[in-house]
Length: 458
Image (cartoon, rainbow, N blue to C red; front, side, top):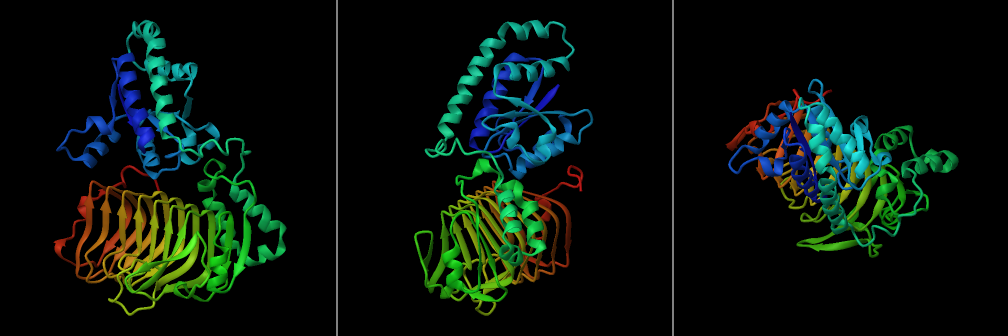
């Protein structure tokens, strides 16, 4: 028997290592695979991982608050689930069963408790043809469990933040349910939000469950028609709807500690800092900036952000800008939908130190360096359209990152140096339309990515 241990994030990784060591001593007849330990230096990381996912039919997912919605965890669980007679156990490290959404909710959840953990161990033992195994486990289980639990509790304590207990008594509810309740009760708000937006919010709400929020007051809804009104409305716990029109962030005069201008070489760029639970609904509005070194929007240390239905770009002519269109730094739980991001921005989207980024229905075109630049980030993208990024460097740049892209199209990009540049990173794709692109120095290196068509369902 071979069991795949799935993890994502520091806490989950530490628990996974401890789990492998504990179970290897407890059930010596089973083999446990853990990527951080069992892939030797020099081996192809991605090919080895895909091979192990395809051969293991048992898995244990180390689930934490940090990774409960991570695309990588869901990918590995999905790949394991495709194997015949597969069994997957979800070890809830610092989460509850009610925190688990999506595909992972289908699998057997195990609490971090001695008796429930024993149920998982016994279930694994039943699959091994060794009559003496039950007696062996019985004799050492108490000792192994105590050592395992002590280390895990220490890992949880070390990973907790100072404010982690401040909101422990907040009653559970979904903030998106609060949004829908407000918008249906207040007629003026309902009129300002189209059915399309309501449908989008309903689809996005799993990212915004109470475990990741810290405020009890309901979300406030504002409709704005000027850049200063927009700036004043950018506060935590807010839904902002823009009237269709043109908004230049360079013209914003209002500033506070969370919304301010940051100096760049040839002017200033708008920075949105430490904002949580913000929804921007554009209704087709256009956001621009004038300085060629500025990002159109820059989010820093923000969490739980939805941005829907905007056109964004620079006012400069193509080929003159050195700022990105939209940038996220140290952000988590971001959902971008129905955006058109155009050059001459250097990159359409830049992510730095970001987790749980979901991007859907986005066009990126006419950018001068490439389409995407991600550093130390994890991102899941679907229905992406990248085109007319001509005479660029690499279309996609990944550093210490994981990118999964499905049902997307990359086409008509001319004289690109190469398709992708990746360092200690992985690019996975499925159902990718890839045509009419021409490359120069580095060539067409799509093959450096991993095609998931044989692993993921439609």
